[in-house]
Image (cartoon, rainbow, N blue to C red; front, side, top):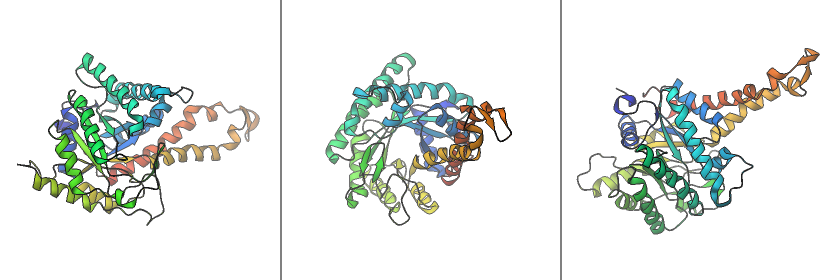
Length: 361
């Protein structure tokens, strides 16, 4: 038995109960699904190709900045209009092409801080409009990240938006405790180190607020996570405390169905060890964000191509083989962009093995 045996929709963007079934199966079989930040059709293709070839499910997500890029850097982002249009465009594109790759895809939006809530409002309305026409939301899931605010505001506001999402049977991810570092314009590099580790009681407060609304939610609880790439030793992860969150929740839930009642998310995983990933997955992590590594991997292919083919792309005509030799086959974007797709895809393939996602279909 594999993932596709438990899903009602075997390939393409999955929604509703299928998302929950996927995460339940991941907990049971102890694997996590990489969430890849996509900023273009090219990065979407790189991720889908890796998942298809590894016989794995995949999560594709757009951040606020990535969504604006998808719409076009020349578009004014006043009132988040570019970010809203971009993530909606990405969603429709992914819905169109994902089925031909033959794998289940979770379509997600990444971090949304308080200042970005107009973006959240925009794509949630798109979900509601799509739901009226098709009986399902446009996106599989969203993330709201109010971790920089007080816990009370974070939990109450998250619950408010979750009530809207729950009417569409939509998944919601939230963050409690801060992920350090900097990503997509949100800078927590100077955050107090104590805030990088969320207490079990705090995590359970989230559970108590959201569980009565719907079971379709996950929590990105901080355990020392930091966005970006840092020298070894500069980041101290404690994935073992995720087990403490599960134990605390299990003891305080009346008639729990499982010893891991909380779906957890791993942010800031660049540079983490296999042991750290394994410990996190064993303790209920079902989703691992992968962004920085993919950005660099995409660059590698294009960088190496340009360096290796430099004498063939300096001019439209003329290269070491002759001054009248055309260079179109070297500077055609489909050639060098494809090299970036290949190296990014290889990096995602590595992650699918590290997270034990490979061959789970």
